[in-house]
Length: 162
Length: 162
DNA sequence: GTCCCTATACTCGGATAGCAAGTGTCCGAGTATAGGCGG
DNA sequence: CCGCCTATACTCGGACACTTGCTATCCGAGTATAGGGAC
Image (tube, rainbow over the protein chains, first blue to last red):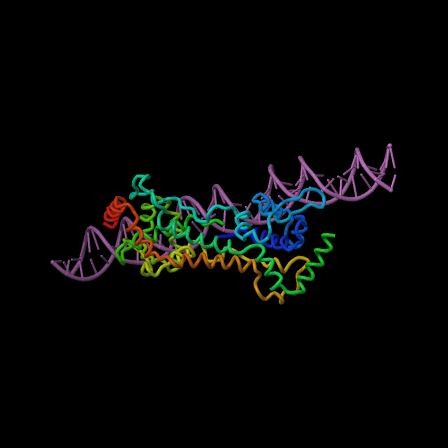
């Protein structure tokens, strides 16, 4: 199982956006510069976040992105699904309906135990991600991040937002 | 996030092997025939299960695979990790240490909140998969599968095991 | 009839192509702003 | 001095190459069995 690295970028970007004063926007190019990642590629993921209604684009000069909702109302799951797609990781191909022991298709009413076990696990995964909001991540930044880094970040923001 | 379809095949194969009398082996070609999947490709995943110590190969004529441990001592997680690899889905690339706000590397002692949230979710996923054993899946087969299919499967097994 | 030997057929194991999805990049459409011009 | 207009520069959005990993396949190494032959 492999989770694209764009998920990590998107979560960091949302944390940054959630740290800004309400209404302030930050362009994708600045977000890429802040995290030192390819701007062209990050734009793709920001676009996905925009399509999913997680962030809100502001076009034109001095435009950029901002959170579409209060940080406390955006869950980590929202971000992950927006970037990575919302299709389930495990897809049951119903191979029990094939082979020499197969019976009439209409007699398969319940999902098989294997699919249930996998889906239960995925539900647990999603529930865990749904318990954490971008607001929680932002609050955690203030507690656990080295003050020196916070100062540098504030300085950089001040220079960029101008 | 995408989970290879080989995982589904492997779980079904383990369920079948767990349904057999202890010690009896079933060749990979028969497992492929029973599930109507490409034998050459299934062999790859069975090999992975073998390397991980989930199933045990018996070489030579009338050989095949059998579970390496009692079905109740093999968890679904064991099978998933064997086939899909045991590397975590979310890999933190520490992008917080890059960009204009980065500080000295030795000052990043704790993992960032984002990585913690993702890893917690993955732990929940693994815990859920660890709660279900192949023995549970086999027991569930006897309860929820249509008797007609079970009869056909038993007939086929009888003919194949000769 | 019993034992041994050989040939066989069947098993797993790893090395080799093809394809899809994620990764990375680019240029074009659209808009709020800044400056200049006229009144 | 104020308002309007235009040109600009900056923004996002979608369309185009490249690489990694999953999918699919093959052939070779090794072994327990089945049969035949000798005793």
